[in-house]
Every structure is written in C-alpha cells, then in structure tokens.
Amino acid sequence: AQSVTQPDIHITVSEGASLELRCNYSYGATPYLFWYVQSPGQGLQLLLKYFSGDTLVQGIKGFEAEFKRSQSSFNLRKPSVHWSDAAEYFCAVGAMYNNNDMRFGAGTRLTVKP
Amino acid sequence: NAGVTQTPKFQVLKTGQSMTLQCAQDMNHNSMYWYRQDPGMGLRLIYYSASEGTTDKGEVPNGYNVSRLNKREFSLRLESAAPSQTSVYFCASSEVRGIAYEQYFGPGTRLTVT
Image (cartoon, rainbow over all chains, first blue to last red; front, side):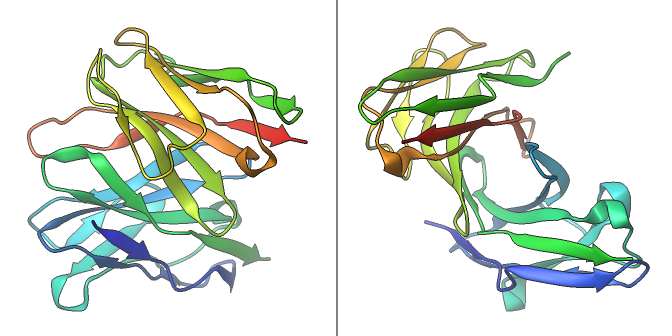
C-alpha cells in the first residue's frame, strides 16, 4: 500500500517570506497526489492535485507543488506567505482509478509570524 | 449545495456508551468514507462505501460499524465507546471523473470518551 511522509511536524515562517512544505511518498505505480489544508476547527480543503501531465501544479490561494518522480516528492510552495495561511497542511497519495484508497501524511503545522 | 454535513459537531460519551455519527452529502457521489484524525497521525480510514449497499473496512475498523443508508447518507456507530476512540471524526465523499478524483470533507465531529 502507498504511504506518505511529511518530515516537518511544525514550521514557522515570517509573513511575506517564502514557504516550502515537504512531502515524500511511497507507491509502486503512478501516484495521484494531493495537498489539503485544514484551518483550526475545520474540515480539509483541497489546495491542489496531480494526476498526470505538467509536473508543476497550480492550486488555490497562490500555492503550487512540483511532482518529482526521481525523488518521490511532491513539495508544496508559496512565494509569499500571508497570516491567513496559518493552518495544518496534509499531503495525500492515492492510487490510479481507485478513489477508495487514499493515504494521508501526519501533517505539517504552519505558524506565520507577523 | 451544502456539500458534506456531519452531526453532531461535539459529543462526550462515557466508556461503554453507544452513539451514531451521521453524515450526508448532496453531491450525488457514489463513494463515502469515515476517517479519524489523531494528533501526529494524520487521517486514518475507518470504513468506506464504494457505492450504495456496499461497505468495506479501512485501516482501523475495530470498534466501529457503518451503514450506507442510501446514496446520500453514511453513518458510523460506536457500540461500546472506549477512551481510545477519543478523536476527531471526518466524513468524506468522492467521485471518479475521467481519471481525476478528490475527496470532499465534512466539518468533523469531535468525540471525547471519558
């Protein structure tokens, strides 16, 4: 079965600084990859997803992620962080044509300093 | 269009009590899921239902039962609650469109078992 590792439990960045959240996956075939964001007390909202094609994926709220097959990574980036980006971020990996087996990472909590 | 709704939002149970968590979606999705979220562990799949009338175990099914009442509704039952079931529970739904899919999440139910 597929698995996901998010190496950073907690990251703090200053408002206006750039952000990169790391995600490494393990899967024997072509993965489907997702980033979700969870604000305090809320459910998960999809930021972006990768299924095929261009390895640089654009998402909502100014986020992007790059799929690197050779490194089994799908890191999330944002050029300039806003205070409202403070939240928990989850990377997830799914199987092709099987929407019933998605595995989530443990999450990275982002704190934004003023 | 409410998306995925869950009731209740909060619940406190005593050890040994039973309860049912309710979930409904209005997106006409075939697949529905129940996850639990624990600190440092991300989301783990309890049960899923690929279509009306079918249910399957996920990663952590012990102590839970589910019912797919109809296409819209998927309930999770704790027959005899234990402190280890203290968690935040999320319901989600999904549909495959071509090769693409994503899961849509409800706001969660925060359950405490004392």
